[in-house]
Amino acid sequence: MAAGEEEGQAVEPEAAVEEPRSFKDLGVTDVLCEACDQLGWKVPTKIQVEAIPVALQGRDIIGLAETGSGKTGAFALPILQALLETPQRLFALVLTPTRELAFQISEQFEALGSSIGVHTTVIVGGIDTMSQSLALAKKPHVIIATPGRLVDHLENTKGFNLRALKFLVMDEADRILNMDFETEVDKILKVIPRDRKTFLFSATMTKKVQKLQRAALKNPVKCAVSSKYQTVEKLQQYYIFIPSKFKDSYLVYILNELAGNSFMIFCSTCNNTQRTALLLRNLGFTAIPLHGQMSQNKRLGALNKFKAKARSILLATDVASRGLDIPHVDVVINFDIPTHSKDYIHRVGRTARAGRSGKSITFVTQYDVELFQRIEHLIGKKLPAFPMQEEEVMMLTERVAEAQRFARMELREQGEKKRSRNDDDDTEEAIGVRNKVAGGKKKKRKAF
Image (cartoon, rainbow, N blue to C red; front, side):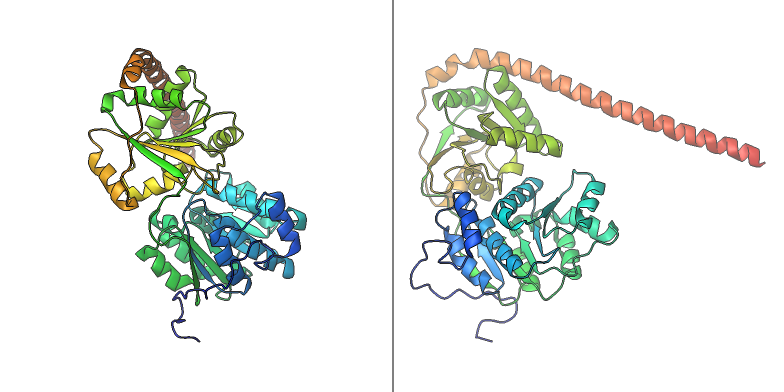
């Protein structure tokens, strides 16, 4: 074993003599090169150039890459190529932090593997466990899962195990660990074969990720395409400094100024996401919300409407800041400034993807100055102010105030409907309990 190749310690790949220019140059087989071509992947991204040849040699990988860098292709292509060589069911497991990311990875596996008949199954919360158990019984080639629901099935679904698994991928590992899935990940590592290939991808190298790397990987090769926090070069970043009470008016002004673009607007809470979406709809904008209190079907529906360009504005909490493949976002607006500076990188990473340009605008109120300074310090640059005509903004305040009133009324109505549904459920439950108790009492009387 070479120096520096102790178990779990990452080694740097040897410097390439000449950068490959196609997937074929990286060692990808013809049938998968054709699939890349059909997906419009003409040239491999930096992380793909670094990771794919090493993965095809059978090495474990720790990949550090910024959001939107083509990580899915970097692990999917080597897995599919290995599957072609040795076909087997329950071949690979991909762990992800969110439901949306799981569905997106599944789509890419299916698209890349369509000509070779690859079957995938998505195992996430918010979906009926019985239908998932039936899908697992069919033994798909690739399982894409969130850790919590997968552990559920490993413990409770009869006949399901991962003893034959050949590949484990942990995507967005830093986020999996930040979401307190450590216990679940430990349980999964205990029931899968030690003799496997492991790919760990993360945007940041935290202490938790280093610990996981030591526990799960053997002599990994480190493939890093950005070692410091940074935003894409083609992203134009701005801020606007505004009084808190006029935030809504400034938002409407910017949406009018940049009309014709697609927008992602980030809010800090589910409630504010819903309120702002209702406000914008009242003003005639095609806005749709995406947040954690929506059902899984509604979340996917919102995402699909935005992807299909049926809606030009997606309002979201940080549930959508990472991992979602939304190809046509032109402008990201931080309506509420992120509390954690790193989330800024992930939010603005929704635009200027795959070499295209994009804009981001961050709203800074009198309460946000310190948070904004932290963001500038993290990315190592001072952001310019977005050019504004304040008189035009003030002309919008009356119409916006009226829309705010309607939005508040609609929110109240939605809340009341929800409460009455919950009350009905509670009443039914109470009646059921009362009947059971009454039935029990009757039985006891008969027994005596």
